[in-house]
Length: 90
Image 1: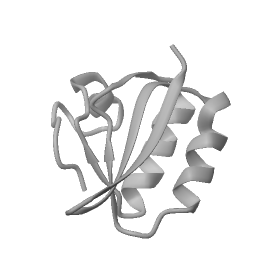
Image 2: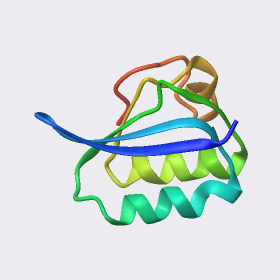
Image 3: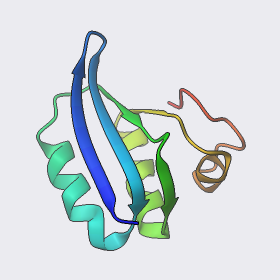
Image 4: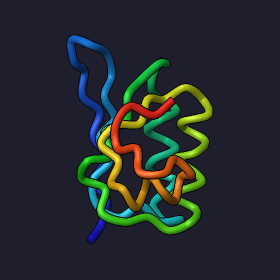
């Protein structure tokens, strides 16, 4: 599966939705989208199906920069070093 990145303005702020498979080849798309966003923002990963190690590192950088990661699968949360936490990561 490819990746789809959407930016949604909500009443609570900016939502960055990442769907599909996040791989090193798709990081430029993610990074260029993030560069256009005002901080803070929330990242919805509820439809993220898989990620390679480079994608996981990119998610760590987003989290470390203050993004609120939501909707993580247990596997993605585990790979991020968060145990089995699946919502609201800071």
